[in-house]
Amino acid sequence: MKRLPLLFALAVLAASFGCAPPETPAAKEGEKPVTTTADPKAPPMAEGSTETPEATATKIAELTKKYEDAQAAYEKSKDEATKKALVEAGVAYADYRTFKANLPPREKYAPALKVYREVLKLDPKNEGAKEAHDMIVAIYKQMGRPVPE
Image (cartoon, helix red, strand yellow):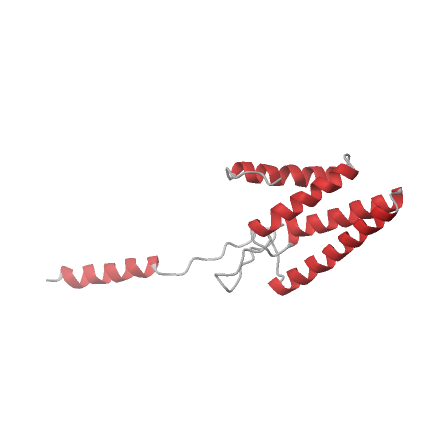
């Protein structure tokens, strides 16, 4: 009978350790802090992203317009200046979508991959676009998913 209260106390103590909420990992010196969202249904944020989904949508709309305007200018005058502007607008759009946008992977990678391919047609030596393109292709392959065309 004397052991029953002791066993009960141990059971309560053991249960309390298992019920504590997990700690958020602390950032080591020189690393970015871990960012989480308050809403568990919200899409995962890009590492270190604090953008709201509305801010992301606004930024994507802005970059899309710049890219489309650069495409239209290049169609009118296929000179080096408009080509360079198109490449820069495409890289800005695709980089934002790939690395900074607060979007789930399904919404990030396919549109960015398409634009990186268009950029590489115009500027095959663009190292940033090539590296990002290859990274996205590797992500699809690693997941066992078909790479979008």
